[in-house]
Amino acid sequence: MNGAEGGGNVGWAIVGLGLMVAAFGLLWVLVPGFSRLGRLPGDIVIEGKNGRFYFPVVTCIVVSVALSAVMWIVSRISGGGNP
Image 1 (spheres, rainbow, N blue to C red):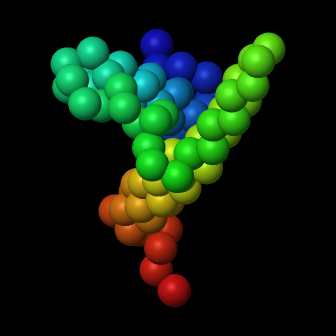
Image 2: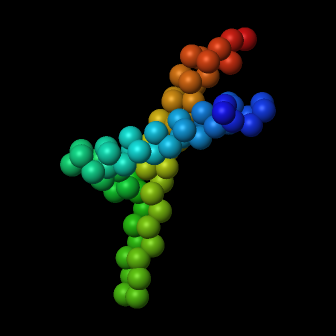
């Protein structure tokens, strides 16, 4: 049994995504300073009497740049980045 016809690449992509999520979870647990990712300088925090508003602007930018770099590397390795 080797899966559905023509859908083998999708299965491997899901496996790869699962491995990346597992690696991220291990980093979150094992690296002490990694959980600080959501509390970077420049993130917006507004505290009032009845609540708090938090928007992680800098964290979003850092995650976006990191994911863009990973996708660029994967694209170059797989041969999809050739002009």
